[in-house]
Amino acid sequence: MATFVSRAEWGARNPTSQSTNITPENGGVTVHYVDGVPVARDDHAECAGQVRGIQNHHMDGNGWADIAYTYLTCVHGYVFEGRGPGHRTAANGTTTGNQNWYAVCGLVGGAEGSYDPVTPELVDAFHWSIATLRSTGGAATGINRHMDHLSTSCPGQLSAYVLDGSLEPDGDEGPPPWPGVYFSYPPVFTHASVSTWQARMVALGYSLSVDGQYGPASQAVCEEFQADAGLTVDGIVGPDTWNAAFA
Ligand SMILES: [Zn+2]
Ligand SMILES: [Zn+2]
Image 1 (spheres, rainbow, N blue to C red):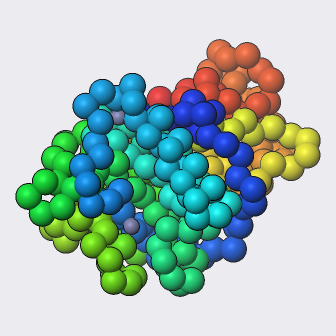
Image 2 (cartoon, helix red, strand yellow; image 1 turned 90 degrees about the horizontal axis):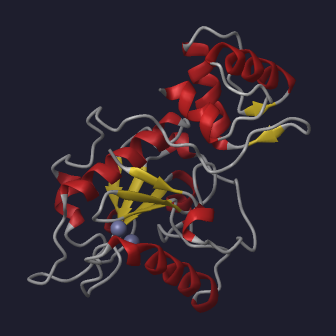
Image 3 (cartoon, rainbow, N blue to C red; image 1 turned 45 degrees about the vertical axis):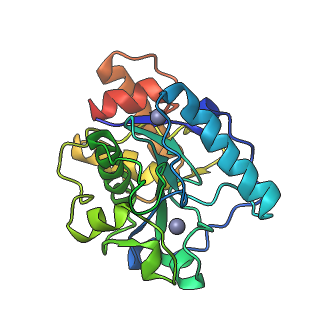
C-alpha cells in the first residue's frame, strides 16, 4: 500500500496562486515521467529533495504558481502531494488538458535502453493516486498519457503501463490518506477531500449531505463520530479522525 507524503512533510513552498477552474468530472488522470535521463533515486531519503527541486524548477525556472502536478509517485511506493485534488494543474500542456485532467508524475526517467525500472511499488502508488482522485469526484473517464494531449516523449516507459491497463486501480489501494489539511468550522471550510470524508460518514450511517463544505452539519457529525470512536471530541478532522473513519 502506498504511503502519502503531505506538502508539509516534503517541505513544499506555498503556491503563488491556485485555480479551482477545473472540470475533472469530464476527464481523468494524465500520466507523466520526469525526463530523458535516469532520475529514480536508490535511496528514498533523497526523494523529498528531488520533489523540492522539481517545484523550484517549475516556480523559479518556468514561472509557474506551484509544482505542476497533482501528485508525484516514487519507485519506493510513496505519493507526494502536489497541487492535490480540486486544483488545476499546469502539466498537461493544453487548456483542455489542464481543465479536465489531473496530472500524476512518476519519478522515473531515461530513454529507450536506459529507462529507470518501473517497480511494483511505483505502480501501486499510481493505483493509489488514481483511486484517491476518483474518490473526490474527478478523474472518472480514464487514464491517458501526456503524449495524448500533445507531441512529447512523456511518459516514457510508463506509456506501455497506461496502454495495457496496469495503472488502473485494482482494489488493493487501501484507504485514502489524510489530505494534509485540517477540516474545521467556523468558517465553512472547502476542500476537494471534504466530500470524500462526508461520503465515508454517510457510508458509516451518519446523516450528512455530501457537498464538499465543512460547515456546522459536518462539524456535528464529526463530533458524533469522534465520541463513537473514542477519540478526543474537538470537531476537527485531522489525521487521527480521518484514519479512524477509513479504518
Ligand atoms: Zn509530461
Ligand atoms: Zn522514494
